[in-house]
Length: 608
Image 1 (spheres, rainbow, N blue to C red):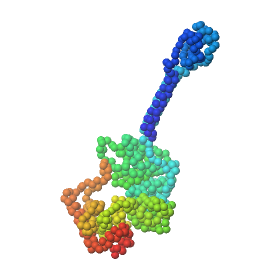
Image 2 (tube, helix red, strand yellow):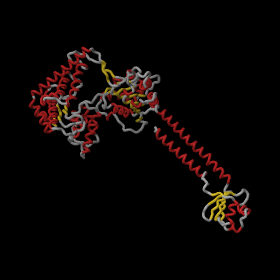
Image 3 (cartoon, helix red, strand yellow):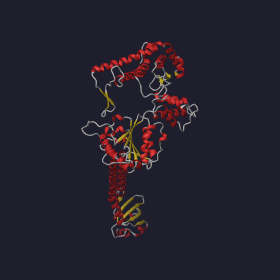
Image 4 (cartoon, one colour):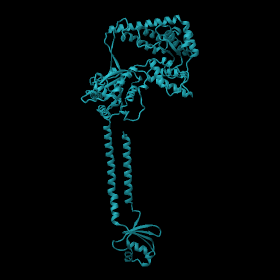
């Protein structure tokens, strides 16, 4: 859309040019003649007799006189008489006339008058008319652009769209069950008659649900690549505008375009931006977002059926979606995409390693083991950071060390080796991290230590990396309590060694408190019984998640007491481990102060 400021500047420039041109025309035809002396024919005859005149130029009825001193004058002759005859009548002799140079120029008086009239009156009117025509043309274009707001912002790829790198299911690692569900959609788009003959109805909409970066958009692109049909891609936020009716208009425009390309796929990313559950109108009328949602509901399963248009949508907030979207006939199939397990992470790393110069020491299995909880996007970022590091060091290959270092960079941030610490701070951080590591190693249900470092990364002054022995989807109370004990190990070590604690434990305490409160309120694992306290729900007006209190003040006091008991038990366990292994603690801390980083193998030797 053209900028209104550019259009205004363009119009101002045109106006200035028009007025400059008009000024030049008026100046050309209205040149002041005050400086040229006007004389009569009688006076001219006298000047000729006195030999003052050098040249006479006759143009029509105008006579231009040039004197011997190069001064000029002008006069007019009577119509019908020749100049020589008029001068002889006023007493000029033939001899005097012969001594003067005469120049005669013929002028068509009729054409001169017409041209003067056109220049003086018609031309300015034409220029003004052109100016107003351009003004109205720009105004019309602006109005057209205003109505263009309601046109869809979707990009079309595929058979009839713009060229795009084709993605297939082979480019998507893992997600076997998820791909099997989507292969039915692909088969329907390729062979719709096979299903229609059996009376089968393919799902109208498929909702891809999963955390950020787990491959929802990639799967949608793979469905489009496999089916080889037009693929409309649009973000949910592109329907939201400050103008009333724009969102619903864009939904209509999107489906009108899709109808022309049936069979086709329509992919709406971040569906929760327009599909949030409808609530009471705060402003006294329906919100613009609700109008957009209503139009989407109508297009998906309204009076007019769109049999060969399949809608794919992605969201990581299925809990906030309107129930009308999730009913059968609209999004009647939900594909849940979880974070990859260790084998899927290894496969994903294998895909991202293609085309990159890898060293002989590369072990993708080890990288997959060190990245529990990483999404596909995180793993891609790990390889990208390793490639950047390799290029910065002018290395020709990507080594295993660079890959492992990039894991920590993605998790915590860049190393801050330039940060200057005092010896006292370095000692405190070393003992703090040694406390975490020792409790984690000695506590039976805690995760084993992978690496300890007192080199700052991001906001962390030091860190202890732990890797689970095996990946599990479920967690019991004992494992939660062990995690709390490990988190408290740093602060308890500071108090044991230095007699006081520092601000470095604030994040550990926040995490420990949150776990303990979840044990009581969310998981029902406390002595208060298998009860969930507090109703968690999404706020459609303020956004985010809020908790409604559904218990009494007396129960709230009991919850606080139970949380304190859990924290206290974990604290006693951590203190017992640290007290019994004080010599090992000192050994780990001194090694950290000296080397700054301890890997798993060296740490296990120190502990044993």
